[in-house]
Image 1 (cartoon, rainbow, N blue to C red):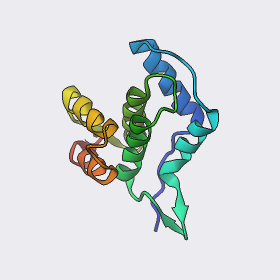
Image 2 (cartoon, helix red, strand yellow):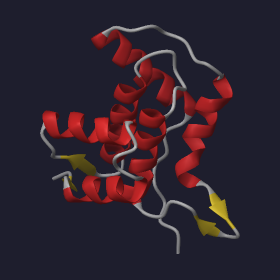
Image 3 (cartoon, one colour):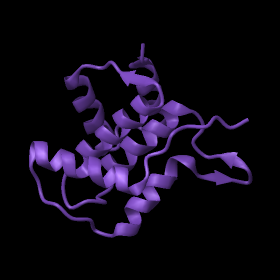
Length: 132
């Protein structure tokens, strides 16, 4: 049975991206708006009735991995990916407990293809806890 999670929609992702740019600076703009719509749905894709990315932590990993390893926005992709992952966990009852430097180093590994999606999902699981 598939678990139901609260999704991030494309407008949520764009809002997160805009907040990241306001806080840290960077160029605004998207390379192709349809890619943001794709990323909003990617964690929930199915094939032959099976989830491609089952579970909360795998879905959270898809957000970070997708934005950290691709250029959907003109700037701030990795930061947006981290915030999407964090927000997705939070709205689904979990919080990331990793230190900022660990998040930075992990995101860098993902962006340089030194950490795959499965390892990232496990890292998120090991560094998350239910919100009290």
